[in-house]
Length: 80
Image (cartoon, rainbow, N blue to C red; front, side, top):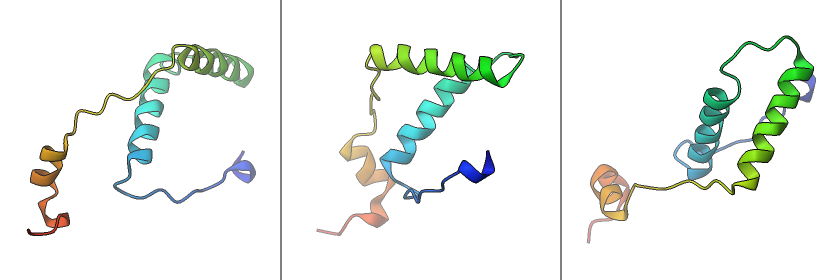
């Protein structure tokens, strides 16, 4: 499995990383939170979970507004 692993750079504060973390958390909590007897079962369950999630067209509901960002990340915004 390690030979198939590909590392892709993702910005530390990028929203793609946030989305990936959200999806992995959902996968862990909704699919991988129980014992499964073998790898084939894990793969089958993950495919079923993924298909269900894609069919529902699950999206990320961002709650972090521009105003919040300007307060929390004030050092990154230019002074006007």
